[in-house]
Image 1 (tube, rainbow, N blue to C red):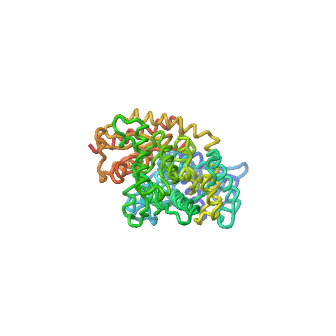
Image 2: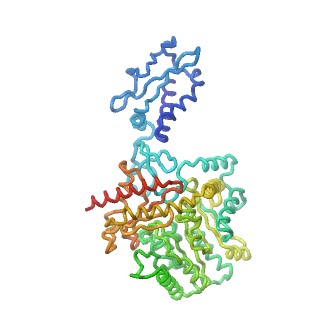
Image 3: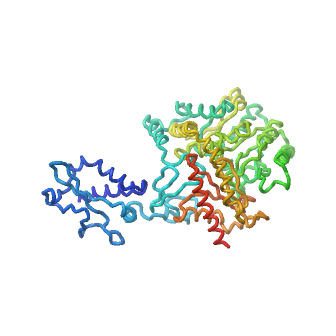
Length: 566
């Protein structure tokens, strides 16, 4: 009985390693490490060593040998001995049988290989959809319980910017764990690692931002930005009439009530409209693909957008506006639509003309995703408040941040002296340790250069391969943050009906065993309800060869999906 228990422990451990690393040699290393421990274990010496156990023939099959569904022998026996010692019978797997064997053991270790839907205890995004079960990750790949190797071409939701299983980040987290301080209440304490991260982030702005407020998610960071923007004016005048925000259609700033109120994505807002703030007003997005007039230059397009913002200030009363909020490169809502050159500066100038704040949401497009650490740096302007997330922790810890300009810090410092806001899990040392290492890796490995260079190649090559496809309306983006918008026909730019689920079909095909790749789907691209796009946001560590692979797969997927529809 004891032998069987030890056998299954080793067997299941080997199976897990096989799933994760796809190398049975790695499993043999694990077995070899137990070489000097084996004599103390209750195995029976084999007959070749003078014992009373079974013969140690490497392919001997006995009636008690476990068999898979196909009837093949699921393990062979290997005799290991030291000079003067008995040989010990160890059950091992052949490389050829490893994958087939893992399917049998999976029924014991993880249950169904795919189904985590109606029978799941987790209240997921879709309660009737089956999801692949991920058991590991390394670099650009994720590994499933059914032994598939998935290329993560979207970094999840543009989160895993350094890939999976990064040793340096894992070591930084373990180092912080050893201190015994993973959480500290910000009401009482400060932490050296939190201070170091905040200083590093400020250095990344060349000192143009003054303070950093750490949160647990992008939505939380946006909630903090909304409240701080209001408090700024409240510190100046307790009777301030500044209560209104101006944001944009086709935007997404988070799913909490305040952040959702700022957002202009109609489908996400619809169920909660009665609960949303009524003092948020939306102007059009900056989307030249759908809004530029024939022959209109960038300068003329930007001037028209600035005039629209100014008109909204006048409509509301300039003295009532707290600020204007925008994503430099719109992610989930529009599919990587970048600002037109000069747009951010023009919108900032309108805000400052009327004393309002210019607030940028870089939760998805920041932290190097577009080729600069902060997207606004390419435009050479500075926001009054900026949020960031996703790539800040790279998926290793849930962390986001709000960065604050000197003028706001000074007003609060000279007024109440405190931000009237707080959260339990803000400024956690364990989160900061991970984010600090992420930032160091991005800078020390010159990954921003890689993002910039490969981003240019990626967009050009993608357009060369898919640009002429009749259902590809537009390919756009910046850095390693690219979107593909799908249409019924190029000339009309008419979107597919929502019920067709084009973006979901693209994802389902891409993630299938035939292609093994993730893309990030989105809907509501045109009007907040209709329109489909996918986002490609691979890790910053990719190579040109990886880009070529992504393009090849995505091109094949797009052609297959639309050929099937026709």
